[in-house]
Amino acid sequence: MLLPLLLLYLILSEALGLVVALATPIADLFPKGTFDKIEHPVLMGLALIVAASFLIGLAMRSSAGVRLGNWIEKNTVSRIPAYGFVKSLTKGLVGAEEAAAFKAAVLASQDGAREIVYVIEDHGDGEMTVLVPWAPASFAGSIKIVARDRIEILDSNLGDVSRAIGHLGVGVRDLLGKGGK
Image 1 (cartoon, rainbow, N blue to C red):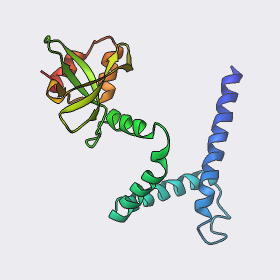
Image 2: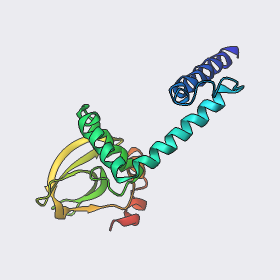
Image 3: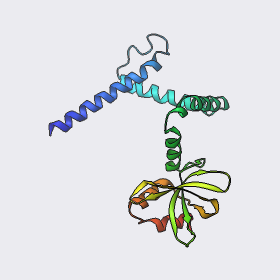
Image 4: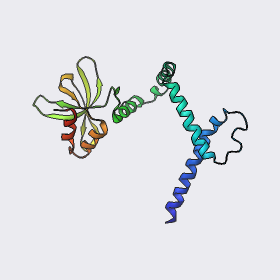
């Protein structure tokens, strides 16, 4: 009984200490003595982190901010192995309009059968790379290069598609009703 409570206390105390540690560099930007008499440093830390995030978010919406963000991404994080994959997968999971990869689709075979696939890449020359998932492991499967005219993009996010594959096809009818034939 006491062990879970003790673990919860330890986790919360570490998390609250982390909030204060993250907010300290932000507080250092203010004149000396501004935060000397704060009674609730965790709440002030949270407020500083939220305010700084908001201001950075506003700045990143400007054209200069977008250019800076693109430059940082191009010259730093895009060099990390699998960054592009994770970025595309995340955009696909949240249903981002600009997601270039990981779109749910239906692949039509020459024999008339259809199967759920993820579009990984559009080659721009009439071909696409797709992942044919294996149920119930929705992000494991075989990679195929197929003609673009055999692909029908679904109006579904990857979370719904992944769930249907994980349930061995239960729910595919609803997915097809959202945008498939």
